[in-house]
Length: 128
Image (cartoon, rainbow, N blue to C red):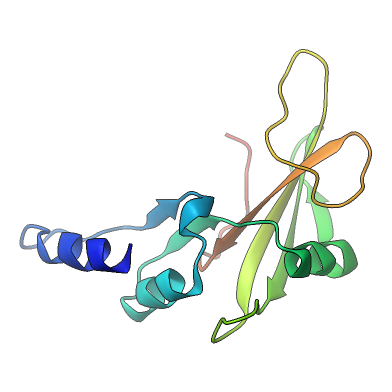
């Protein structure tokens, strides 16, 4: 992915600027994040729910209410092989009838699914 982005960035027309990168969990990799940070590009990447991330989220993630069904929390963690600690947003959504809840079980919280994202952006999650 780093090679692809390096080439893609060189092909941007003069005066164009990339505002940010959004990627799925297949791109959840410390090398990619370092590459993006080295070029001061903002990113949001879906996190793989590793055991370390699950422990961090379960232990120190204070959730805030986004709406009646969704809560969000923030935690910092340095995963194995990473050069630094990074910010993770954890989204917890109540499972409800008539709507498929996106996400997986991060921790044992009956009636909820959870998703995690690693990001260097500072905005808090919001309902769209």
